[in-house]
Length: 227
Image (cartoon, rainbow, N blue to C red; front, side, top):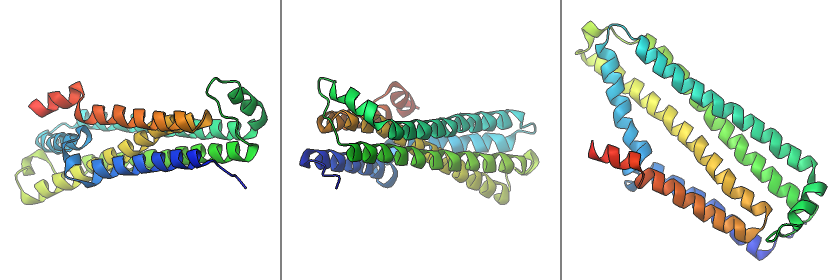
């Protein structure tokens, strides 16, 4: 039996609830439409409109490639993080004694440590799938840019519909990327559980506050709000 303490269970429920509530607020409510991530969808639509007006679209291809490269970097980092989590799993005895020496460290059993490590690996696997799918969607966008109607047909209804469709795929790629990054942030909060349940609770609250401020009270948010 793992026999986690009541405080451990409360901390984990707080973590899962905070992640779920934050994700729902940003992606599934009217409140989330004002977030920085969602505001960028307007610029994605504008980018596709400008692309349609250009005869030479090398610039659009370069921007698309840049987005793909950034996503590939995070996908690769996710794989490295999974490897690191598995290394923690195989080095349980040494690291447990190290955690017990920390001022606020709570010494877990070997099974508890391994369960926490598998949880961290699961988060990173989730992040990898999000980044990998985002990379694939950016790849689709690159193909759609190449297949876009010529500038001479920019005013045709079919061309405008094509622009909207491409912008939707681009927005979905950005959404998946954001979810992968969100998993990274919550993985940092999850690390607090390796020290103890109270640091886990505090770290989760801190991550939520930092992410909320970036979405609703950052310099970039206020700059776009004025636009």
